Length: 187
Image (cartoon, rainbow, N blue to C red; front, side):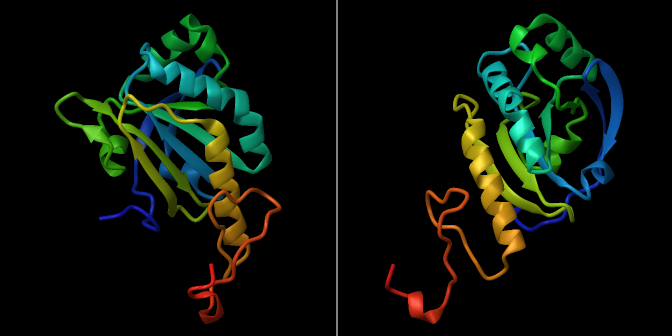
């Protein structure tokens, strides 16, 4: 069953953000756009490249009112150690969620049970707590923050403009479509 338009399920996890530990629940995600960015594990190979890319683009997400939450099945202690050790992860100012109990990984159907780690899943949640984007990659395929930014802008645009849709390769400011009988077969 697709997660698209489903409601965010309850959770309570520990997190690391800017030198502090904190508790995060589903309630913290309500009222703003949020991205949950699952990755397999701290101290690995592709993961720091993705988290650094998000860190380099974090200000752009914040300008759009979007909060970023990275998620792995590591503990919040491991997140702190990685942050303190890695120059790439030292750039991370967004919240790093710890999911050692696998509640989030199961809620978003990205847990590899036999390995105890998550697939590379990206989920965009609207301010009402509905999942508007769900993408899952094999763990060998890294993601790119610029493409995620484009999709966030498209999701926010269609949320603000009911009845319009964003075509392939849509960029902010480009033309959108208004689905109608008149367009059938003409595109």
